Each structure stands twice: as structure tokens, then as C-alpha cells.
Image 1 (cartoon, one colour):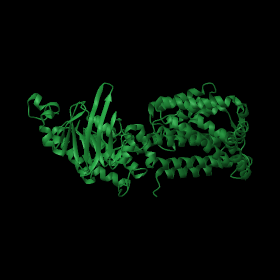
Image 2 (spheres, rainbow over the protein chains, first blue to last red):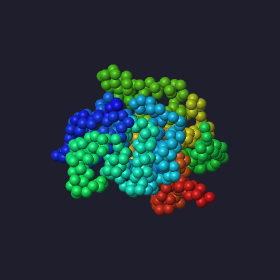
Image 3 (cartoon, each protein chain N blue to C red):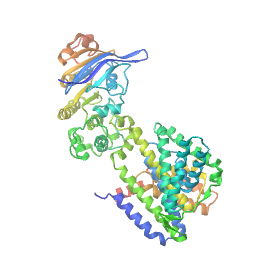
Image 4 (tube, each protein chain N blue to C red):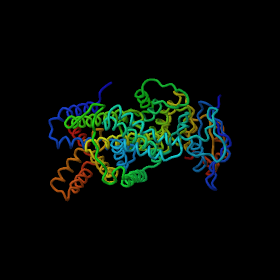
Length: 257
Length: 345
């Protein structure tokens, strides 16, 4: 499988705090990778570095053979790496339809997108398709500020998908979503992702979600990756059980959240 | 292309204003002209306000447009004189360029041609805004507002000190032709009225078109969440810059037309109270439609004229009370009344 994203020796320090320490990861095209770790372990820092929000203190990030370490979030987005946010970042005074149209409009207005991603139909059709894919049709005319949390999460992810990514980074897609909604949300997201052939990296605290949807897990602890491999193996790893899922520490057998 | 309601309304208003113009009493056409000129400036401010930035210094472009239109020959001569004092041939040549251009255009159209004056206003305000935009696009909120105010007061200060441009008194100007056609008295008055109506309505139509483009729609997204706009691959700063230049050019056109209509310009056009009036009208009108600024300006000018007539010492109070009532009962501005009426119907 081809490597689409590679982090080489990434380090990030904030004063005396080390948020990332010698991170080396190669992500294969079309794979779905889960990032786990307790709060402050360095997962979001990793996402922030890949998307250009933070610059690493040292190391390099390579996307499709191109060094993107020094690029801005906008340039990285235009190359095809998009993200969603732990706290949904929406256009509060615009409707769901207008929120999606803003992203679709950027793609359709052309400019320096890295390569011509196939655009079928009109922007309006593209938005309609997305509304259907993410189950947002009923909310199309509602202002983003008036939406329930689960729908806000979906819209936030849909907006990242609106700009036709090659890699999608999701920051805690199910946080704040009720237990009976989270699988439906993830099913919808994964279906949309598969339809477009997108590589996904997602940060998640819910081990049920991680176990069900990922093909590979990266476990973070104090800025380092302490385990990397297929879900079954990583979740059984004694270090991961001790530092991440907390099972060894409390002696239980249930997934920690 | 399907015609939207705003385009139809603009077309109807244009026809009504042009047809009714010759039959209206002079005071009323004068009121309309001033309102339309102010309306263009407020329309410009509206384009900028959509990005979440409010300029407290739009008088800068209102005044600059007026001076560029009225004093283009004087400005060109002054620049050429500056250039002549330099020992560098490149500087002499560069500063002589505007004069060559002005001479060539005046030769073709005659001096003080309305069309030529408008073109100069557009070029000068557009260039100035493009340059200042590189600085201003980095700021938001009160910093943007105060920085724009500072620039307008710098222009005011320069003009007050400039005896060649009439200092605090300013100077009189008189348009003489429109696109090369010589005009006098009544034909001149009619031509100015028609030009103001057409320019104002074409400006409203173009802004309406722009706001429907993907770039035009980005402004509201920027107002809501700049971070997300960047993460959608669009440039916040470039969009603000584009809207700022458009906004300045509109203010410049408004200023140039006002100068042509009044026949006199002075530095007061760049004073902070002028900028304040523009913001006042924008809030009074609301941002519901590209026609709202014109309605707002008409109501503002009507209240001002009548209040000044009947209560010369306390006319500002009438404007203050109007603003208070609008903020209390119509926070979306006067234009929101139409929305309420439509909902009720």
C-alpha cells in the first residue's frame, strides 16, 4: 500500500512541556487510523501539527511525497488534508445549507487546488448530496447556532468533507454525542468516507468506537507513541492498558472513556 | 438567468427615479441626489461590514474620491512639481505621468468631464485602499475601526494644511461635460441627476451580484468564524482585502458624485463626523438588502433637512431620537420592516 502521510521525528515543546516527542508514523492510503491516549497525551497536538495550526519544534511532515511542515492551514487544506474539531467550528448565523455551500463554493471557485479533484454537477447538487449523506436534509434551513449537539458534530465533519479531502482528521467525533447516537453518527461518516476513498485519522476516547471502526491504532502517552498496530494487539498491550485505557490500573475489564 | 426580486426592484426604482426626476421640485431632486450619493458610500460600508469589520473612517475615501474628481488637474500638477524638484530622472518621469494622463484625457473630453472625474475617483480610491488594505486586513474589531479612523484624520490634517487645495475652505468646482458632450444649466443639472441615479443603481446591482458569488458569500462566514474559513481552504485576509477595496471605491464614487452635485468640496468630508454619519445611516438602514443604504440615506437626509428647518438649534436631537427608536424597536434596521410585513402578509 502506498504511504500517503508521513511524520518524521516530530517534536513539539511548549516551554518546559513536551507535547510531542520523536513521533514517527507512516499512514497508508485509504486506511482508518485511531489515535488514543489520555488528556494531554499529544493526540490533538499531532493533528494540529499535521494541519499546520502548530509548527513542530523539529521534524518533518510529508504528504504525498511533499514536505508540508512549513505550510499554513489554508495551504494544507488546499492540498487535501482537512479536519473537524472537538468543539464544532461552524458559521453560527448561517443555515446548514449555507455552511456546506461555503466549503463547496471554495472548491468550485477553483484556484490553486493541488490537482483537479473531479467535480461532478453543480455546487447546489454537491450540497444536496452531502445533506443526504450526513442525514442533514431535515435541518437544511436551520441556523447552525440552533442545532442539537449531535447534528453540530455531523455538520462540522460534513464541512470538512465538503472540501474534498484526501485525508480527513477527526478530533473526537463522538464527544458530546449521546451513547445511542454515536454509532449512527460514525456509520454515516464512515460510509461517506468510503464512498470518496478518503484516508482517516481520528482521535477518540471511546474504545468501543475505536475497536469497531479502525484498522490501526496509535496509542499516545506523554507526547510519545507507545504502541502502534492493529486494534486487537494495541488494546491488549500492557502499557496501553496501564497508561491509556486504564484497565490494568483499576483491574477491571471495561473500556475507559 | 432567472431574475431575482432585488434586480427587478432596482430596475423599477431606476425607471421611476429617471422618469419622475424632471417633474419633481428642485428641493426634492436635490434631496434625492444627496441621499443617493450617501447611499453609495453606505453601500460600500455594508460590503465591508459583512466581514465583521466596521470602518469609522470611511470619510477618507468619500473625501479622497471628491478631491480626486475635483482636483485631479491640481493633484497632477502638484505631483509633477514635486517630481521636477528631484534630481533623479526616474522620479521626475514617474511623477509627471499623472499630469500627462490628465492632459491627454482633458484634451479628448474637455476639462471637468463628469465621466473623467468619476474614473479618477475610482482609480485614486482603489489604489489607496489596495495599499492601506495590506495593513488593515490584519486587524479586526475596535483596532480596525480606530486605524481606519486614524487614516481619515491624517487626510483631514493634510488637506487643512494644503493651501494649494484651499485649506479648510476647500474650493468650488463645476462639471462642464459628460463623456465629451458639453452641458450647461438645466442640461447639466439633468445630466448630473441622471448620472447619480444610474451610477447608484448600477452599483447596487453589481454589489447584489457580487454578494451571490462564492467569494461574496465568504464575508459572512468570515464574520462568524475566521478559523473555519481558513480550514476550508479560503483566505480570510484576501477576502477582507477585496471587500475593503470595493468598499473604498464605492465611497470614492459617492464622494465624487457629491462634489459634482454640490459644486464645492472641503476637508470636512474626511472629518470623523462624516464617517460617523455613514455608520449612523448603515445602522439605521440595516443590511437586509443592497437597496437598504439608499432608503436609510433618504430617511436620514429628510429628517436632517426638516429638523434643521424647524428646529435649527436642536436638529441633532431629532436624529438621536430616531436612532434610539430604531435600535429599540428595529434592531435589524429599517429594512427589517419589509421582512416583518412580508411575514405578516
